[in-house]
Image 1 (cartoon, rainbow, N blue to C red):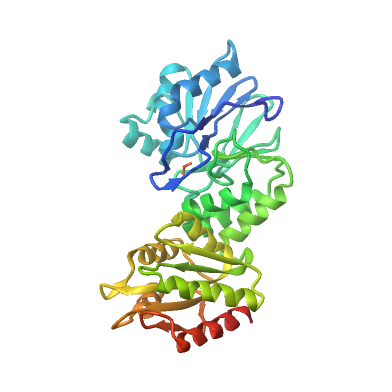
Image 2 (image 1 turned 90 degrees about the horizontal axis):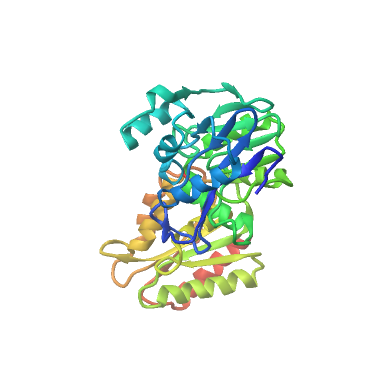
Amino acid sequence: MNITNDIRYVGVNDHEIDLFEGQYVVPNGMAYNSYAIIDEKIAIFDSVDRRFGEEWLSNIKNALGERTPNYLIVQHMEPDHSANITSFANAYPEAKIVASAKAFAMMKNFFGTDFAERQIVVGENDTLSLGKHTLTFITAPMVHWPEVIVTYDSFDKVLFSADAFGKFGALDVDEDWACEARRYYIGIVGKYGAQVQTLLKKAAGLDIEKVCPLHGPVLTENLGYYLGLYNTWSSYAVESEGVVIAYTSVYGNTKKAVELLAEKLKEHGCPKVAISDLARCDMAEAVEDAFRYGKIVLATTTYNNDIFPFMRTFIDHLTERNFKNRTVAFIENGSWAPNATKIMKGMLEKSKDLVYTQTEVKILSSLNEESKNAIDSLAKELCE
Ligand code: FEO
């Protein structure tokens, strides 16, 4: 695949993976992108997952013909991109490895060598000329690890963006970009909104026509759309109007309350209600929704004088990603000593800019007139 006259795609698709990064289901697989810039000198950008080394080296060979690469540019050391650095170094003993100082320190830890004889250490705004193409390296710490650099090619106006602007899904499957890019971003980079904002500010000074990320498709048109979503996500702003209801239910009584609330929200004109049964859904989808919409209802039972485990895990996922700037409501259920709302509020104590609804719903085992009325009041308050 040609990205420009001189830039070729040499990455791979993975349809074998069960859990990406050990936790994310990827029903449409995953792509580990790699690119070659073929100029007077040849640079390869990043390697691929451990299981695809041979395919990747063969893609490079096919793209280059008789020529061999001069540089491997290592933008990110997470093993989905770094696992085949050593096989590349062995296949092309003359090639130099270009990376940040932190990346070389990680190579020593991962591979037992930092390629001392062959390394070119780069930092902020350092450049590397390939001929027509001059590459400028831009540091992007914590997007999504500390060693990350992204690279701007001023000749083709391409930003090689590392994990930024990536998504779940292999490239041979056609699917909506935003849905799986959002789940990827919130799940994997969501904690580092401030660092993504810093990178977006650096990128704003560049004339970019194409973005080549390490996962997902090359972005070539309407770049303002993608940059706008990244700005929304990384600033923790509300992307869509609507209410998320995240719940757990042991015997179905909390679920009935959630269904009643969803019905009432629709009656009161709520534009969108997204419901997640935390014991059964893809937790990453529920977390994605929590960051997408402006309002969230947390409904759970008191359990072992704590809250039901899936809700505890869910709230941990939110707080560790700097959940903020949202309206939050609570529904608690308990048969003898309901305590869930107090515990959930305690878990959210350090989250900034949360507004709690005035209405809190308490259910004693199952819905009664009082709790039904409270649900109606909550629906009204959320739709105001
Ligand atoms: Fe795609 Fe942070 O690795």
